[in-house]
Length: 198
Image (tube, rainbow, N blue to C red; front, side, top):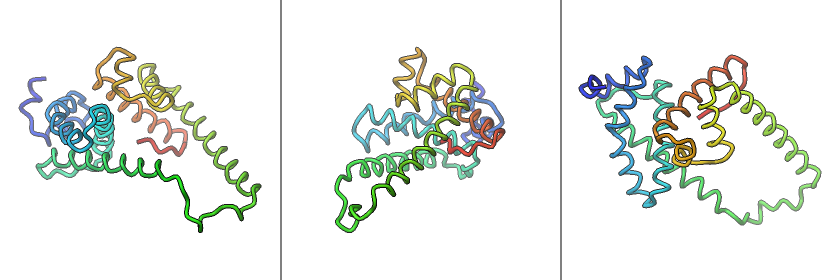
């Protein structure tokens, strides 16, 4: 591990992309305080900051894997921008949740109830099909990865809660999710299943 401490951020990114996960551990150790500090300063809530921090590192992992980082010598700033976008997305979603009243022009009283039922039924069938495909992919994973995916997506647990439940560190639970997503993407391509796995 000591060899990684002397590497530049770009060398660590390349080592990680070449398959060395210890390189990512060093990137995480190097940058986590700054990123968490930024998030907590914005949201002013430790539990929420932990959740958004974990979400940020999942996004960073995904973006690195998809070669969406271009070397500029400013990896930390790029990571902070990812964190910023995660925070913004969270608040956007919160706004949607709190919209309770529709304006008069969006009144649905003129729509026949059987038309609404057809649309809802179609959505329900699509959701059921997607859920079945997700379960199929999840069940093909090794047990530790399957456990994390189940807790995250079916029990809506945070990575902190998952770590406490299975008796591991948050970094370990993040790592398991990372590998689970990689494996599920491979399986979805292999079986031509069109799922958006973030």
